[in-house]
View 1: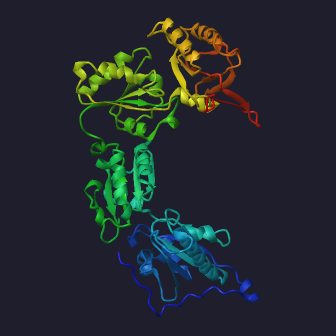
View 2 (view 1 turned 90 degrees about the vertical axis):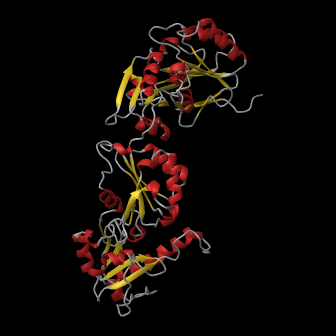
View 3 (view 1 turned 180 degrees about the vertical axis):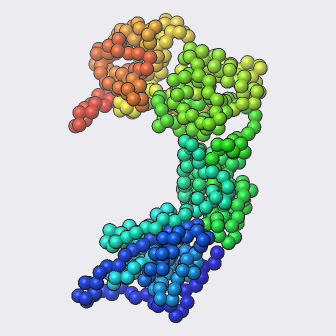
Length: 521
């Protein structure tokens, strides 16, 4: 919408003066208003916005150097001849400038100058209404005035309908429902950052398109959201346009456009389609904080979740998603069940703790998938934070040099093999990460491993005993190999045994940390 131009005979704005008279200083200060005008249609302005504009002495609005202001055009019919108008004209609108402080320096100088101009009116006792498209505190230029003036003058912010709400209304589709999460992103973010955030959320709106559109489209495609993404241009304004984001010509996209990934609930067209597949997903050592954007997307896209019940409980429940939990000792059966579902066209996520390729479900799935009847079923493995890495980070950096990972469970391999590998790793002076050290049915392995290692390691070797890392019962203790008490170790514990070079220190606040130097003598 073209903005209406200020007429030449309107009252001109007074300029700030360097000194004021005593009478001026005694004048009661004016009131500042940040006025939200809504997304563009003047009929969507609130009654309060119209009232404030009508009562204001000064009406200020931002514009580019061409002088046209969208904000002014929205409020035009509520302006009167007696209003003092303050056009706040941006010195630059892109990051190309010869200002010595660069783009940021030029903008900071502009905002400071604009705030001074408004302050002169406020000090003179005039009421100032700063117009803002949408909402004044939502990606609005008004906020820069607010931060500089609100603590000095009485201020009211009049909220307005945002372009986000207008876009959803024009598309006629819910943005979020139930427990879904809406993420609002500026298109100016780097493409890989956009990709990660789009992958990790349920619904999204990306603002500030224009020249950012190619990167936004690329992020939508890379995150798997392009098929469901919609495009809205100038919502509620003249020239409004809506459609599929994938079909939008990049050269036609203005700044005042948004990309929308709407709610999936009750919207079959938003769910990925295609052949069945199995994705083995690593959820990390504990709850949602340990999920990566990639694993969040895979879990959200799956029709069926399969896994050990304890790990399934870490995954948020999605409407319409089927969950199949089972015991921890039926890995092969679980894998076969998932592959059978995928063969029948279902998108299946096999949920694994930690990293699925470290003593977890990825191998179990791939072993079964190697059978001829599953040759045509796609299988992907997505990594997660391992228990060893999580425990090491909580204790410092004990895995800072070469290390070996060994499972003490003799359920799938003989103890003699485990003992041989422990001796070999200890003889090579490797740090050891010991998985599955003990359980209710396995109580002697830790004691045997400790005795074996004491033959080759100093009794003062640092040992990390980490239990339930990332969980509500997290306990991370650093002690010595001589102090290790096997009876305190259970199936939720992982042990990190230092090398001859692993060090232990106490910080000034009493925190104990252990690390293995990067250089080996």
